[in-house]
Structure formats: C-alpha cells, structure tokens
Image (cartoon, rainbow, N blue to C red; front, side):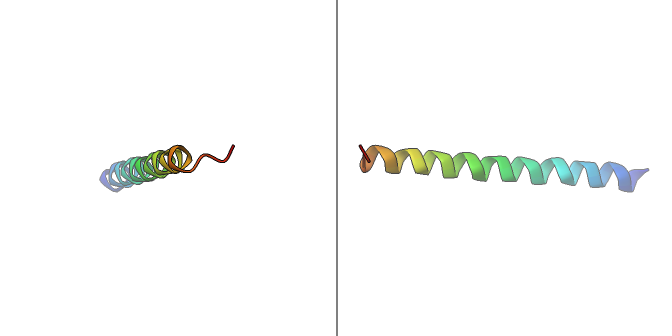
Length: 39
C-alpha cells in the first residue's frame, strides 16, 4: 500500500517537473519570437 502511494507521488512529481520544463521551453520560445520576429 505504501509503495503504491510512493509510486503515485513520484509520478505526480515527475509530471510536475515535465510541466515546468515544457512551460520554461515555451517561455524561451516566445522570447525568441519577440527578439527575432519571423514576419
């Protein structure tokens, strides 16, 4: 039972880290678009 809770907790932590890395990549991408406009 505790292993199941630990696994689910680790999964949520991993998803949180993935979400933060994706959001930071998106922020960097939009900064690049502002610095170098393609249009």
